[in-house]
Length: 297
Image (cartoon, rainbow, N blue to C red; front, top):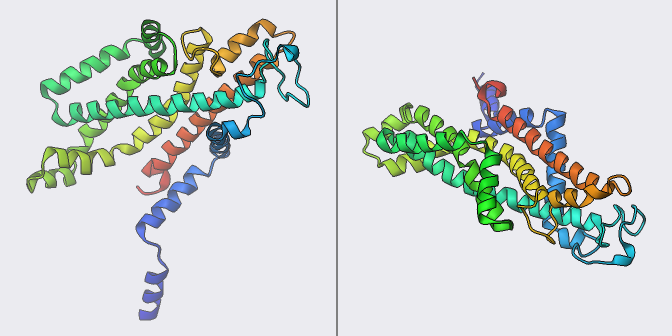
């Protein structure tokens, strides 16, 4: 009997290992999540190594090869001034990823801080923060981003500022709701009892334990941000030419939909695939981080 107990205790995996196994079993257990993860990683590699992967300079003009159909030299053809569509598509992935990462970093950073303060301290400060967030949320995100972009003008920096500001309320409200629950838990009350400071409790205990839903929202918002940036570029107040951006590529190609449809189809499909993939990864993370679906409770 003693030997069996000893063998069982040796073979039993530590709790954190079992948690990881449950997480990956749920996260990787859906085909669409795996598809989204693979596509996202492919676009990430394209974005990081765009100068090495792209066959041509995305800004190089060659009027003698303008509006070519897909061929062996230009796999996706060329645009109206002879620029290689595939090269612009690859470099456009870099722009989309940069915008997505910067926007969710800004919105998530400010949103988490404001939401944590509002949820933990409450009172007048919390009420003012949440009423401001509620007011901003009454304005559709795209309308707010359009207004800010129109005020600031186009360009990468201004697009990031506009979208980052427009997405802060969503993070703040989610974080505030999580903190309101977390601050009443036993471990937080115990920290209060031993005289821990509010900053220590927030940074070391509350925020880390509220981060799972924030991580899911970050993943979802990557897709939303990429779509919004493409929309701003499509109407001419996003990334300014000649910088390759998927939204402006769709705009440039719409005059040639019949003669050279690939000019608009290629960036349109890229936008659709990347947004869909981020949403699928977000769904997978949400399910994997839910204790009920992991079988923890």
